[in-house]
Image 1 (tube, rainbow, N blue to C red):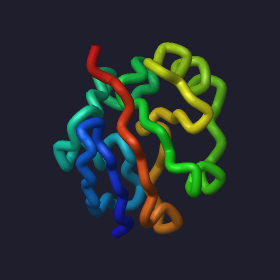
Image 2: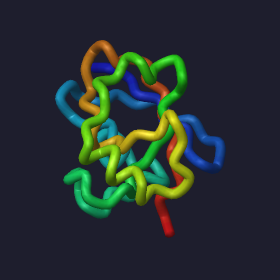
Image 3: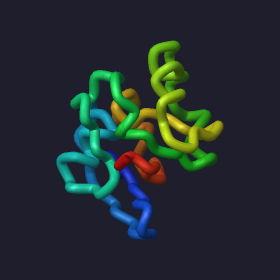
Image 4: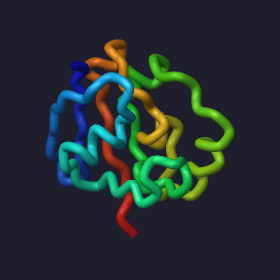
Length: 106
């Protein structure tokens, strides 16, 4: 199973195994990662699973679609490496992906 590394806002690092086909958001929820709220349950409708993808990984992800791009406008402190973690599907190619959890609790 691929390992996803979540860096939470308090500086903690959590390396967890996430099953292929799950989203990075589901991996966070299933492993109690602080800061990934996911109010909409992964429907790309709330931006409370916002994360910053480590620059070394950004080009390895599938491009974001228009819906995700639009929803990220509602995220706090959007940056060039911002993504909604509900829209990133875990695969073997993402083993070692580093995600910095955004400010998702208002």
